[in-house]
Amino acid sequence: DICYNNRSIKLSDNNSEMTRVKVKQPYPDHPERFESCKQLLCRNGLTGRCYWEVKWRGRVYISVSYRGIRRRGNISDCVFGRNNQSWSLNCSDKVYTVSHNDKWTHLPSSSSVSHRVAVYVDCPTGFLSFYRVSDKLIHLHTFNTTFTEPLYPGFGFWSWSGSSVSLCSL
Image (tube, rainbow, N blue to C red; front, top):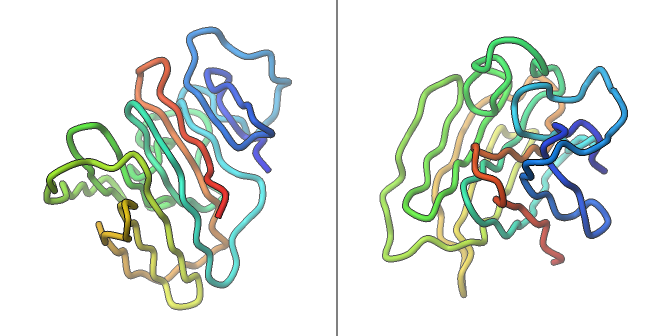
């Protein structure tokens, strides 16, 4: 269930598809809505072990975050992966990168970028893994940390209008 999205993100398909749009959407004011960052945070937190897959196009980031991530102010405080509140896989047609606390790692490029990725998080053990999905799962990166708060899925967009993320049915 998604409610903390920036007004430049249009929700469709029963809130399972998110698209970056030029025309601001008429969402009501909400204190937890992201103001300048073109991203959204899901309302329901993650517990235990969770796995999901998304299809994407354009330039997007697929993230998990603590709920307390800043919604306003300095971009580095708000953007997924640029602070100690969030971890992110950044996807484009040319490269994948991962980021946490403004530390960026460019992942080795494979023969092709898949437009479907998977996320696996094991909250109790502190594992967060990202995979490229094709006919099999191809490991991209694992963060190994200690999660000190509940995590929430998040999705964000670079400046390109038309970029999108869709949750996949499993």
